[in-house]
Length: 322
Length: 185
Image 1: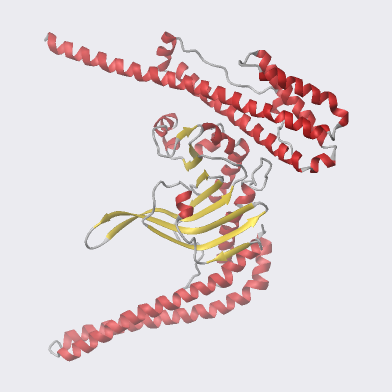
Image 2: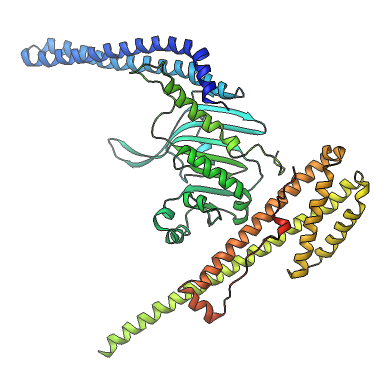
């Protein structure tokens, strides 16, 4: 784990030369985008004026519309091509370095989770996604604990019509999977608690109906209970996992993120899902990338995720888990 | 006039009966949950007893001077195994076993050879694990009792509870010795 001071030093010494090269690249990509966009607009204007003033000249119309088609496809194609190359260079140049800076035992790969297994195995969302995208994969190990996480976007089909398919997002954000420090067999799910906030004891009454996650588990930590609702396949195993100490740590971690987080314990692993509505690790296109603030934001998000090992005390291995 | 009143009364009576059945069943279910949780505590405690012979044979070779404590814990275990119920005697024995274990593990700190042996480390992990399970079982029991007591004492189930003889149960309270941190590492 690193301090902000250390990051600033790293940024000044090691990141800046990389950023300068990427900034030149960014400007080039921006220019290409502007040119492509302008070309499309020009062709469109030309097309419209041609229609207006030489309606009868079919040959001219065909030629102009051909050029318009080319400029639109070409412009968009070029824009996408250069943009994605730029993003990939930024990720391999900057994000990858920030990850190893935080902990040299960790690695970055911009591809993401290879398949949706971590999402399904977490048992957090009860649905298999129809569409699953993932990027920005980080994996590594601290002590006895292996950790991997990536951005995911899981969607399900809501409606299929002849013209198109409508999707709904099941979950979008960061999904983490780590070894837990105890052995257990069942499933314990910790969800952000909406009903409790709204209705208090009455909310608990409704929560106890069949949720599909297992039996409702009522725990003793009032701050924890205000933030989360817990379901489990086994009342005792849930408390074996969620000790008073761990509950405190989860509350602190949740408050660090400031978001409604989802946690599950399945197959001796712990899963944490933090919802985000945007891409976390993409560089700006329209503003300079030399500033410290985006670097700081990437650093804080990555450190938060890697820090879960320490925050949940996963490296205390005194209960016999290998 | 009379037949419509009759229908209303019958419907009301049926609804009331259904209501009573639901409440009664929920009281039974909660009480069973208490019993279930209680026997789980016993299960976990027995796991702890099961570790004792292994512990004694592992440390015996190293801790020559502690013969008396080892003999004591072996004796306590022999006594507690035969208990089927949870009377005060049983609780007393459990507490004595817990403090004897504490003492042995504390003393083991002074024997570096013992501390490093793989057998001992595995035992230590197993004992820690059992302690976690026992805590979890007790917490589950308290949760079940709280849930049951709430039903027995709160409206409207309290009416039914007093008619049918459901009584509040006591929570499990750790004695002072047990409240000390039970993990050895």
